[in-house]
Image (cartoon, rainbow, N blue to C red; front, side, top):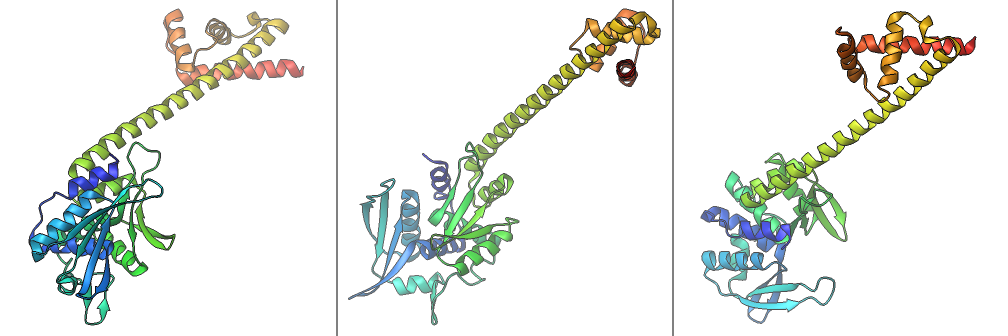
Amino acid sequence: MSFTTEVKAEISINELHECCARAQLSALIQMCASLSLTSQGMALEIKSENVNTAKRILKLLKERYQVSAQLSVMRKMKLKKNNIYILRVNAFASDILKDLQIMDEEGLRSHPKDDMIHEECCARAYLAGAFLASGSVNSPQTANYHLEIVANSKSQADFLAVLMKRFALPAKYIHRRNQEVIYLKASDKISDFLRCIGASDALFAFEDSRIQRDFMNSLTRLDNCELANEMKTISAGKKQLEDIAWIETYRGLDTLPQKLQEAAILRRQNPEASLNELCDAYYEQTGETISKSGMKHRLAKLKELASQYRNE
């Protein structure tokens, strides 16, 4: 089962107040239904590839309008060959559309009036219905975070984007294959959207997976950083050993001041040690402490002398 299916399965069983149920059904019918004319009048044909979405629509229709719907299942012959669930409502189609503010005296509307989604709970229910109708979200275990809702028109996309901004969800949208797609890419905003539409279990699963993934990415970055530092330390130690060998060959270490002699001998004894490790080794040998900057200064002085002797 895909993560999208899990999210839709969860929100499709959430209990709703009557006003919220109306708002959610408005989004579902708006985005899943088409209108046709028959000898008996107008009829609604509602299609969905998700069985939980189809069940939700059927349940809400029966509870609010006490209408019966003909259910049929058709199998796609292309791509994933999913089932398409078709609900056909032959009675009271006009009354249903008017009650859901999908149709008025001027014709079909792209979205309901503000009074339907004025309350926050109704706005959340409408967004949940829009996601049930045509939404999808990547699994948090995939490489990219992505949640989207496919709208039927630009005006509908604008409406959904504005509605999402009420909940601090900065959705963007693009035109793709004659459709308007509203999407979120930031993982924290996807979490907020799941919380907004009432997908609590999916939210916990998303956050758990996201935290584990981010933790592993942090560990990887830390390991890479430590490896780079270690390689840098080894490279610096190698150059310092070359400088010490040059001084010893052409001038002799006994010509150096005592502090520089101690630093040279310490580096030869610990060729791959970092500055901190050299400071610890110095304390173990002499019983005296030396700062990291002090050790760095002595090694830099050895480099300076070696360069000077090479030039001479």
